[in-house]
Length: 88
Image 1 (cartoon, rainbow, N blue to C red):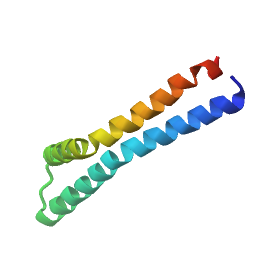
Image 2 (image 1 turned 90 degrees about the vertical axis):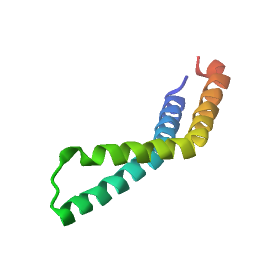
Image 3 (image 1 turned 30 degrees about the vertical axis):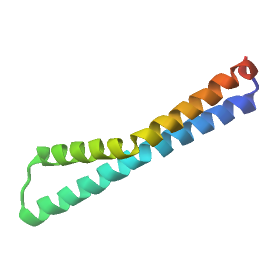
């Protein structure tokens, strides 16, 4: 396996991680921002208030995008296993 192949596999792996994690992170960021604005407006300073809404939002996103996430990861793993002979 050449250095170029290692860099290509690492780059593709990082891209898959970013692509798969981005919906969860974006939803978590948006929900957290909305809860923070709500806390500021109402002067409620409860630290645990953001936990349950974020958890529910992330669960909903996983339900909606879970199939796509799994298919993306499986396709990448199949590609890695298919090219395993070239990597040795």
